[in-house]
Length: 397
Image 1 (cartoon, rainbow, N blue to C red):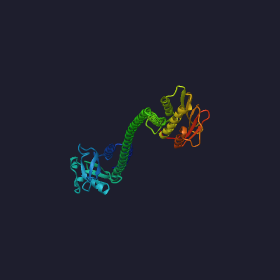
Image 2 (cartoon, rainbow, N blue to C red):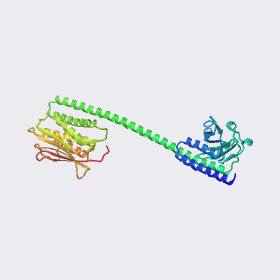
Image 3 (spheres, helix red, strand yellow):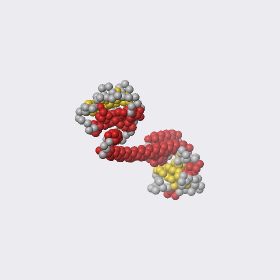
Image 4 (spheres, rainbow, N blue to C red):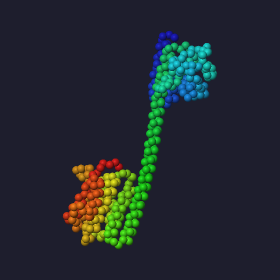
């Protein structure tokens, strides 16, 4: 071959390696990469056949996984031993290129039958490297005797190196896809568990609400059968608190199951319920107004009991003539959004506040206020005015 033809051949082979490298980087299907490599290699060395053999550690052999020019039944089926008994086995074991210009006179190999069936005479084999172990072997086959040189080996080695990177990329992609699939399953499992938890929690809410209403009904019937005034007061107080708790669950069942709720909406509903419970003359008016204040359910429950106690106290004691007004308001502090104030006041006859007194709900109200890290103050000039100040924590709904 003259120099001009040699230069032309080298340039063609270099262009083929570069073009194939670009293709391999864009392609995510490893099988397509291997098949295209076999085609381009055969074309680059002007032969009819090329194959890619993959090492199988379980059986210690080399399986033809891609190729060009072979009859049906070769690719994906034919194997050879991964030892020096075959050209590809020798390249795999030694890690060095294996050149056979004329297999007809080479008695050291025990060739698979497909070599003779395709009239293979000359071969070159180069190793396709891997991360933990070699992936396999890239082999050029010709049915005519060839005289391969070092440049042909360099050409095939370049392809083998690109294939090695394509295999490594495919392995990384497979691991990534498996990880993503596992993460997806974990997310789906988590979503399913959360949905089951929500259903169970809602069922529990229903049961608690129903049980509280049942207890309230039992207390009401017991009240009708009790003639003692002191006993009636005690039963009424218990029934009122049970009703307040039931009201919490009635409010929650109309919303999404969360650990927080809007106390403003709840206290309006509670006041409406308290007004209906009280068999008072129509001359006593109960009003309620509130900002949106998102609170933890434990805080809502405690403050709800406070509202029920103080409103009921006003109904029971503030209006001896049966007429008056009760106002309930909840406002966030405009200067400190982390605090809120609830005011419950009436325009009744008021009462004298004695230090340490537990009458008129003083003890219970102050304990509940302390429970939510708040304060409770009362003034009794021109009626009773309770001021409950409490923190509004930034809680996740």
